[in-house]
Image 1 (tube, rainbow, N blue to C red):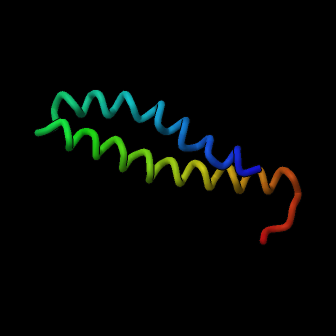
Image 2 (image 1 turned 60 degrees about the vertical axis):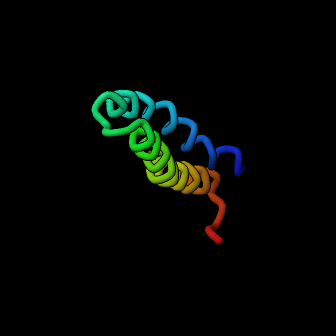
Image 3 (image 1 turned 180 degrees about the vertical axis):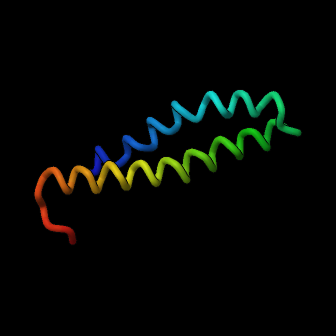
Length: 65
């Protein structure tokens, strides 16, 4: 079950790569672009992972803990 929880991070890492590469061209430093990419993965990955986790709980019919 927890395996599905981490899929959100993988999808976000792939999707956020394009905006990170675009930002790399306009960012003052490469470190700024890398931090933008990492923070985006943490924030949006957490949101998507929680949604996927809640959806899998809802679909399985298991009561919430």
